[in-house]
Length: 261
Image 1: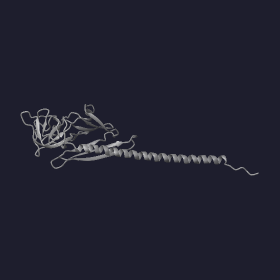
Image 2: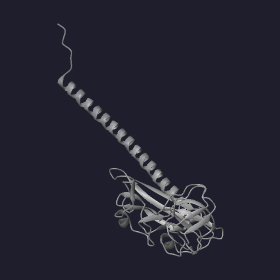
Image 3: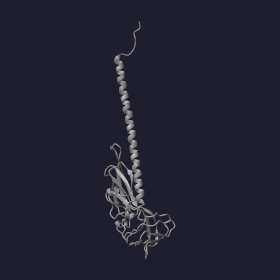
Image 4: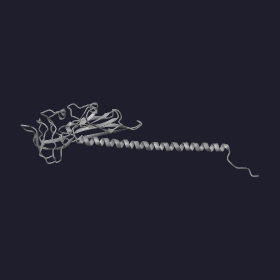
């Protein structure tokens, strides 16, 4: 009679244990590989996000009226240039409500303001409404081929530009960090003193979210004003965090603003 062949209980237990070890190692390998792929994806997303934010700020700041760029430790603020030209004559009596210009070559919307380019005014004057002063009150809509600009009220320009440079500017724009949020504020009333982030956040202007994952207090600013020999320079940096807060990505950028927009 032939003896029966098979596995003993000990052999079966050993096989089950070995299969369990192999399965555990395989699961850990797959989990670590997946986690690594997710980490790489999140780093790439933060890097792309940093590039987009940095490029948006850079492009907008480069279109700023050079003498208007300022910061208060919380916010970066500037006056956007809509169009530029030269003037034939500034406002004259008796009404002081019209400026004669070389056509802008593009339409300028109503409620923009005119500013004479020069170094004779304090920066706060660019945000003020003094009369006489370097910045006009709101203007009427200007066509691309119009040779005159009508002002909403009388105004005398205190400065003159040697090259008769004249620019149409829009309402101020600010970028501020509030907690983990990076906001862009626009459409608010200009003020001689730069408004705080809290004042802008509670104001009547338009608020747009640029980022929701900034590390607290990481939005650092430094503005070097322009001079007759060099352009203005804006340095800014910020730090983005991932969803779990375990890793961060720091972005730093330098922007040069030409003296003549």
